[in-house]
Length: 352
Image (tube, rainbow, N blue to C red; front, side):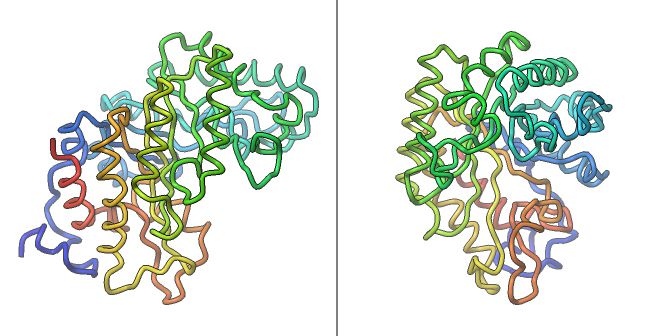
């Protein structure tokens, strides 16, 4: 049995020791696309370094520049331990984009969220952003803001109800794009959000698009949109036609598209049958990414938000499968080997 012939199986042992196929970065390059993985410094094992070195043309250091890492205690700056990840990518000539997020509500320390005035928040961000951006000068692209739209918070315009929103009001990201541009004059600056592209309903997309249009009209130097690809099931996700249409609308604003934070949910609420789990997951991903790659030329890359299933944030986020099996969320299994079904799918959808 060859490596690829094992793709129809559902057990790990058939390919654990198979030789590695053509790297994904090579497949994606055929369509002029980048391929990347994401890793935090505490998961940066020698095995994961080997996978990243072999498979990636781009790389993201997870939560690399968050306030909770660099200034967990107000006024006390600590060494950025994530810089080891950055240095690895530089040494191996792997392009780096979307270094976590300059502003993301989930990585703010408590002292920051307790600030209630715009002037005080502005002073803290004006201090934080140049420090982290200047520490990583070879980063090609930055996520300036992440997940600023959250329609279930029931705020006008769909804005997420955070301390920054309370202090600055709607359309606050524009100021920080302008500020980030003064620090990094040539870097790609991205607005990243979730639910906008992948959700079956359109509320988040409509809010995100309106917010980006306002910022662009205000002169915000936004270069790209990071479309989170947290895929679930065909029922919960938008159709391929919907995704293509939404991405096309964002691209029409003059933005490149980065498909980012990709993974597939696999827990008690997601019914992937054991006997066909990998086949069904891959079929769902192919049904979406295939048309996107073929019909949205503004898409420049795909980035998974893990290295292997072992490191995925979904391990602790989703309720475990009721059959006791560990979840599968990504192209690379817990053994560090790419799953043949995923490789075969990527080979198909990246053909020129």
